[in-house]
Amino acid sequence: MSVDQQLSDIPAAMRACVLIGRGEIRIEERPVPTPEPDEVLIKVVAVGVCGSDVHYYREGRIGEFVVDRPLVLGHEVSGHIVAVGSAVPDSRLGERVAIEPQRPCRVCAQCSAGRYNLCPDMKFYATPPIDGAFCDYVTIQSAFAHRVPDSVSYEVAALLEPLSVGIWASRKAKIVPGSRILVAGAGPIGVIATQAARAFGAAEVIVTDPVPERREMARRFGATHTMDPITESVAELGVDAFIDCSGAAPAVKSGITAVRGAGTVVLVGMGADEVALPIPVIQSRELNVTGIFRYTDTWPTAAHLAATEQVDLASLVTGRFDLEHAEDALNADLKPDSLKAVVQL
Image (cartoon, rainbow, N blue to C red; front, side):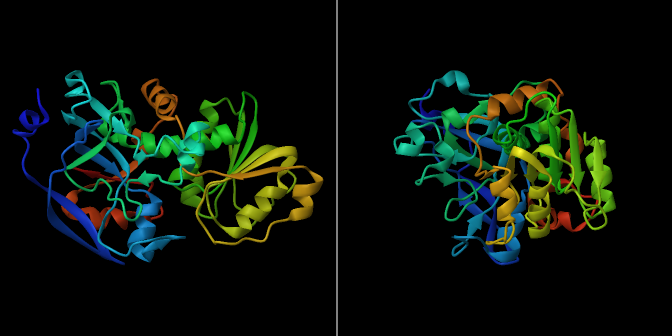
């Protein structure tokens, strides 16, 4: 079946929720994209709201990435394949998929070394100037449309993207069965990182957050202990690894002091561009300090953890919105009991 034949049953136009400027969202009509030879066309069903979406909406930029033209947000995506490019087998039609929302060049030194998340020519959904998935249809290279089993709902499939962040953080933190881990920040990524750490075998996951409701949610999702960083010190914990999901400078600095010699610090949260670090602690303990930037080869693991219910993603969804109310979804985080908002199409 040709692409033209497949597209004959698909509308020519679709809805897209577009960020026009800081704090300004509107619904537009746009052409439905046509898949390139190595791509698939996906009817979007669910899109999770990420902190980066909220940051672009409120601030218009994240570091060097600046929204200087209309941008479609959303990169936590699931749906089903409705058309395939000429190089993709027709057997993929109808598949339920979770999208890995990136397109690396696959030929640069980073890609060749297996670090395609660091590709300097990366095209990533909802990162200026690449549009995301707050729209009815999207295209992605076939290899980045990951099939999910029928037992995994579309909402959960969309959340394999933030789970991938947690998996990548756990890998960077070198978590093994029996590890003791400190996580700062009990927002969506902190809670997901907590679940990922437990799935990787961590015996103890201590979560810090100044908001009582957040600490309670962290306990519900696998934290063995929670602490209020305003009133309690973490300096004597001696954990194997510290994963910062807060981006808060005080949390980063205090968390580093909680790590044992030769332990690992993983910086996940987006915060200030520059933070003063306790260099003597890092030097004298020979700590390994690293960041994470997206992920590489995490979707098979994420799908397995979700399908076997080793992580609970469904319960993370605390708000559901249609495309016309995507702006409400972007503001859902203003409630302290909010974890994940999902836009349903």
